[in-house]
Each structure stands twice: as C-alpha cells, then as structure tokens.
Amino acid sequence: MPTELTWDGKYNADGTKKSPLRVELPFQTVETVNESAQDRQRQFDLFRRTLAA
Image (tube, rainbow, N blue to C red):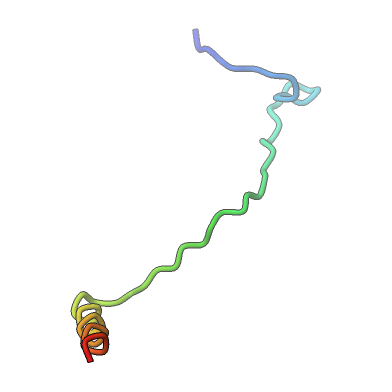
C-alpha cells in the first residue's frame, strides 16, 4: 500500500492533481570563463612582472 502526502489544495474539485505553484526566484548568475591554463599563467606572469617593476 503506497503512502502519499496530502494537503488542502493538492487536488481539484474533480479529484485530479493541481499543477504546483511555480515561484520565480532571484538566483545569482554565474559567469563562466573559458580560458586555458597556459593563458591564465601568462596573464599571471605579466601581472607579477608589472608589480615587481
């Protein structure tokens, strides 16, 4: 015998399930950087040289 959670408003008056309420949440957008390790190292070396000068 399956177990089911029920609550007021889960079913329509005719006994069919209602669609769940969808709430739009303000998720943070994450930026993806597509660069190689070699490019990253080159930038780091350039930055390190400018600090040393």
